[in-house]
Image (cartoon, rainbow, N blue to C red):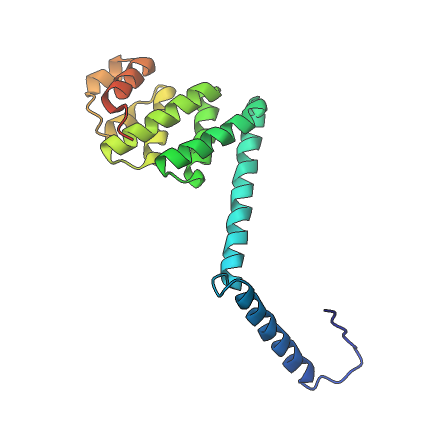
Length: 179
């Protein structure tokens, strides 16, 4: 379909009526082709969701590259895909969590262990997954304040005296399989 616009022509509304008719006709054709299920609005939403997902994928890839972990981008995406299917946590939450933990740990292996632990702790305590990721990220660098707010059964003395490895061992024992 082509549209010719003649600058010198008089605007009389006939062209608008033809365009309106063409748009309505196209909309009906799309509805017929999709059995009435797929509407233009749903297609638009799907397109925007795809674009947002693609952007999040690229941001994670760039974050990993900046950390010197660019080689692990594909395995990170595969891990996120599997974790999403197993846990029901959307990749919208998993990609930023992965990037956050990778920045803190500098290791994809440690990142994946902590993401799995975070899911178990989240399920075991009823705490939001993102909140658990934040607490574990902070604890990894020595700030255990966030862990206290998770109500995970560790005393203030435990949080002050135990190493991060000790704390994660306790959490793994306490919450393993909760998810």
